[in-house]
Image (cartoon, rainbow over all chains, first blue to last red):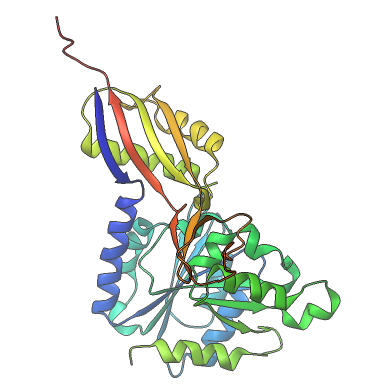
Length: 215
Length: 115
């Protein structure tokens, strides 16, 4: 017997994601799903951002990591509330993982929640977790072919941060190609060039965040 | 790599809606979903063990990435993620297919075959 279904495979995840989003909205929290390849500099970016903004904005962090708690320890040292999710091998966070830890955060005391996804350019793009915006971090040392190799990630993001721009002189990284390919995939994409290490472009990134905070 | 999570989602979705032993599942998977069919089949074998879908075959329809140009209304297949209209060169378009992750149909063993 054939049964017609026409059902979105990720419907259950999308439903929980909507529920997460409703809870975050009720608490007036702007939520970022931060995605990148391993080693692009997510944790360093996060540390710098927290130290620069924590006196003005109440920040919370959810750290997704496959096995270790190293990143969460670094964030904990900044003094903001942080929850670690160890995915035990899973290559992305999903909505249910966020749902199950969110009550451990002081939600009513957070304006900006940054969820650091597992380092991976494929899987996280497919799973909504309740975010307001996806922010993708690409570092210059990864190469300029990434937008066309991982198009879903670039087409789903609201903002592309190009990191480690201080290293561009030592690489073949063609930043104009990255911008052109990314905008062709996603014409509405914002792009900011930064170096979390030297501080270049960081004010612009903070400005992007502040514009979107509900306070 | 996320094929295992997708295989698990398929089984969860079917648990909610389908009663009986499942023998085949028809899927529509978009070109831009990043799902590798061989990997999904392999993951599905593992994820379906001990469930009503164990041993079911996956019939995977690959849906090409297509867009419609907002300038000249031409519909075209996007190749190599080059988002440019082949007719007029425009870059303002709507993606109309290629993002699907859908279960379309399942086949269930008939418990009461006609006499």
